[in-house]
Image (cartoon, rainbow, N blue to C red):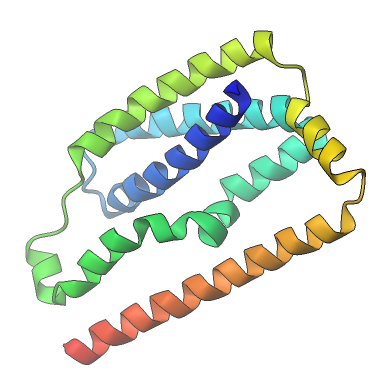
Length: 178
């Protein structure tokens, strides 16, 4: 159960991290040093968790997919769609004069979630075995990996194609309205 909570918190933090990164990239995130420190801690925590939950090889693969935002761009991007749509609704001149402001509640809660995730990670070392989730997945699949891998890769490609289409439509709407 703790393993599933950890994975859900990691996914939740990935969405929040991407939201905050947009402000950090624009240079309008308050306390960018704190954000950078917590982001590095978050990377370390999900690397450790992936390796502990899925074993070394699968854990490293999951880390790479997450680190290079393939997981986000395939599956998690719809969670930020409302904030992107709000940005696209404003005329370009208004975005320059009044840039969007970071939600301080989300920014503040992210640090608490990272700390809680670190605590759950330590707790999980004592509760579950190494490679616990991979073992459960192997039992479920009966060592038949071909179809799930094809489905996973196909869903990643489909998720990215849908994201590209939606963003193009939003961009075209903005271009037509100005």
